[in-house]
Amino acid sequence: MLTSFRGLMAVSLAAAGLSLATPAMAQSEEGSGFTTSANVALTTDYRFRGVSLSGGDPAIQGGFDVEHDSGFYVGTWASSIKGGPSYGDLEFDIYAGWSGSLSDAVSVDVGVLYYIYPTEDLGLDTDYIEPYASISANLGPAEATLGVAYAPEQDSLGGDDNLYIYTDVGFGIADSPFSVTGHLGYTDGALAPPLLAGAADDTGLDWSLGVAVSQGAFEVGVAYIGVEGPSVNDFTDDAIVGTISASF
Image (cartoon, rainbow, N blue to C red; front, side):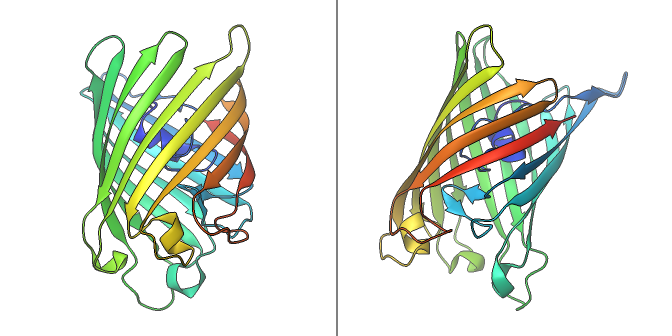
């Protein structure tokens, strides 16, 4: 799996745009042009763009991807959540797109993501769709990513839309299994952290700083995650999040 928007979802310290994830170890079907990969993680708090979707409690996460040599891919990812009767206790995502290299140092990723909450109890329209795109550059031992995700107006977003712009930087420490990541994101619309926390502002920032250690298919990491807006305990308050993950 490429380090991309998909990687940010798969085995992240806070999921979907908060940290660089460990690339999954792809397994190739000989002669078919297809590779498959999977990942599983246990995190102390599922933070989506700075906001906790697990009520400050641990969450189990995992995903599966199929990618073709042409760069096209499809995948799924899921996490336990604490969404109450409106969202239930499971987030299930489906995505598809294309990723490829523009040069030896620059790569792009474009696709569309569908967020599904299959266990909600009220019969509400909570699922929504979000196209995304990102460009990444290798800068020696470091990698930088600039990405955007835009959810158009949908009933599940209260008839509003949502724009998310983010940048991520990560680098490995020479001659060691350690890596360091940083993230800054900006939200404008229905999913803005201040708006979700009860404020009137429909724009907001989220950020994180993390360190991880990898050994083979396993990674253990910790990140400090913050978000702009009212501090609501176990929802939008700053948090230290730990994650252990495996990729196959």
